[in-house]
Image (cartoon, rainbow, N blue to C red; front, side):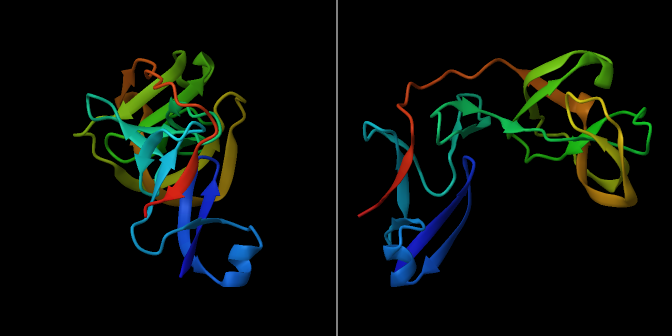
Length: 181
């Protein structure tokens, strides 16, 4: 049996069985059917084990690892959510898992204070299920209506805790998976 690891950016989005023809065509990285795989840097140093490129810091925060740069960082916030156009209510964002670090770069005009850096959802911050009628991509200032109100899990932007920049472990890019024999 052979398996394909589907990588989107630095996040592994799936692992599926593939045929011999697909494996031989070089469409995907191979891993052992039993045992899984580990991520290594360009020198062969083990970075992490398993499908996700993530690491924990001493405080228990979960950081992403970028496969191309071998740098530790946060999950990028792609949009801020609002009740309706003109985006003048308290901003919200899609709820990351508790403990997962996010990277936010938002000009002051969009959230009433400059926000650039790493943030984490507090362990006791509950996500809410609800709708939003407009969104804004951080940095462009354009409020976009969504047509129909969409519902999803979200948290208030103001409830995130600021974190210092992460320490970089010094891995040599790029990272690659290797099967566990």
